[in-house]
Image (spheres, rainbow, N blue to C red):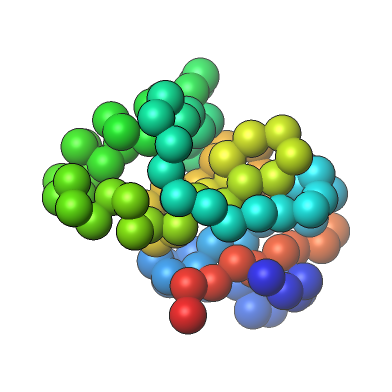
Length: 103
């Protein structure tokens, strides 16, 4: 996880997520999926179960537990390579950007 500026933002990268630094509640933590986990998907109203997101994206069951989940102190902010939380999206008002990346 790095703090970056807008010149490095590339929203087409699946292996990276760009988040508004000021909306995050640190520290961040990486973990695996827990039963009942939910996220507020980018552009959607309300939350959705991560299990449903995996099904919608045709992620095989054996792979689901291996996908990193990034969370802050409030909620899940990124399902690595799959879904970003609407709460942490970069907007025109964003001053500092955090880049999380799968290596």
